[in-house]
Image (cartoon, rainbow, N blue to C red):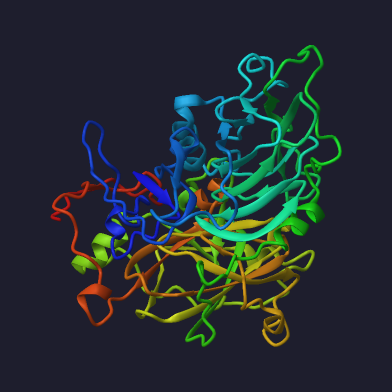
Length: 512
């Protein structure tokens, strides 16, 4: 399965891509043709495989230029470069098998990336890669649009360039108000466009990418390597001097203040040529906790104990169905999902407190989805928690839509005072945005794209553990506001590999 990340796919979830939500896996030796419609996006978006963790190796950028006869909302740059941030796993082509093995026995020790890469290379500081470090060649005095995709599987990243400021001009296929920064923090799944002016002395300068970890500083089991590329000025000068390193502008792994400072500056461009439409009159409200949990293992099926790690939205850990939700909805197949995803948590508590009761972390397993009427205006507040002392950020990604991040803050959301500080004028328009560690994120969108749409944390380990759900947006009153009929062929469905312990496999041929 291939997902076009950030593409709205208007009325056409059949080509959206998420396994178990809008289609089943494409069997080996067969093919499936996707129809991709670029209706609103302008800037950088991307595509990736959507089967288990295959996307670590199968991904790429999509560049959407302005329509013919129009131009960028900034001076046209002299050149462009695409930067793909990716992950390396020592398991290689056996990564998904290693993941399945860990999940099958209830182990929390799922595979960890051994490094981050820039355009497929670690760079100068890893011996196996220092002869193939990516180089971006520039001319003095010229400007360059650098398009960055964070395809890293489960990590937020800091990026900076030695001795050069960057002007952010877009993210997630939409333009932003220009901000000049010395570094950016980019969530997994996000894209960012920045303008860099080659205004330094002729020489070589490192672009450096390093993980940002929002977990406690006691968590150190991640790669501390810095990935590098080299910005190299054209011309004649000595290459014996090492490239300049961004010692002063690359934040430390745990620098939460640096990450928050960058995020709080993000704004939509919001001009006459590039307008936004933030809903003001909300008709549907949801309050969703994003939490690390555990679930019980029936019949001693977990070799690692009586419980296994899980992650939830409103205390429900997503269970992959044997038939994709879209087919079940369209064909009215019963028993595949339940339309009872809760609007609020079943239990209210001090979500961000210390020493929370372990019993609060016991989760339910299910395939619960949320039904929305066509054109409803929706506000969702995502609340991070400190259950199991496992607080951290959660980059939430929605398929089929962009949304407006109208507010965020630390601590528990206060529904009386916090909305007074919402930005309803020029909030960032995105398809992925982070719920702060021990904090909350408020978003708004208009449910004007009928179909079934996945919603999940873009840390793949959290999504694998169940931090996932789906929205079903009902049809409107006209053909133009209704779900399109399916293509003549959809891949057949085979029961999920992550079925509950002890269940048997079954095959179901699609009749679509």
